[in-house]
Length: 271
Image (cartoon, rainbow, N blue to C red):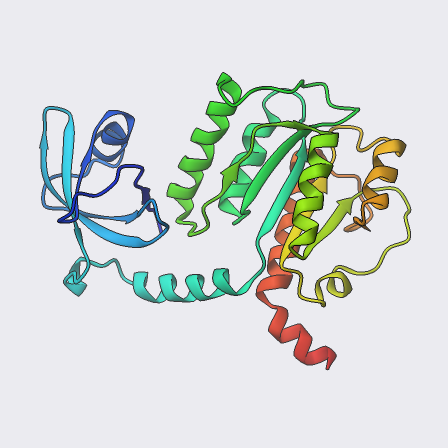
């Protein structure tokens, strides 16, 4: 179900004032009017319903309604919310280490990662990356943030997908070591023949965090593969075809998420 991500803080009485691009989205794109309700996710991650009180002078004023009349809640909303909330809370966060691809492919990767419930995207410059490291204030980075927000609003994802400033591979491995100390499992997607176990066996030990590393066009260099393996990443290959980098990120993260969501079922069968 569609949702709106509130970046504005609420007043003490639960009132919110929305202007700028967010105003344009709600009034001119969603075509909402005074008196109507929309689903919103608060800055703290909570979900609420907002009733539009007034639309004047390019400012929308709304009031968060907690005990909303059921007739204003779209059919299936409550059930979908509770089921997805419980599932999302029960699985390990998935972090995508994505080597910067060529052109605008990162736009698609960012959108699909947000729709697919990835917790964090960490772009990095690998040896075969054509794109160079960019800062958090660059137009590309700001566009990726906007794409992620739009994807979360469109998909209704309750996971707050964050985007880190692109890093070098050395900075990436430093971040990985911090995650590893918190119980993270590192998975290296690589199409060449490396000794590996199944995804099930890697996920069976209930990692606190799952980190997936995906290369750019041309994959990882031999030196990078060695670096990842020396830092405790586990190699995975899904299927016998060579995937585009933008396909690999979605394909692998979707497989991991589905296995985590269904973990109780296949654990039971293995037992």
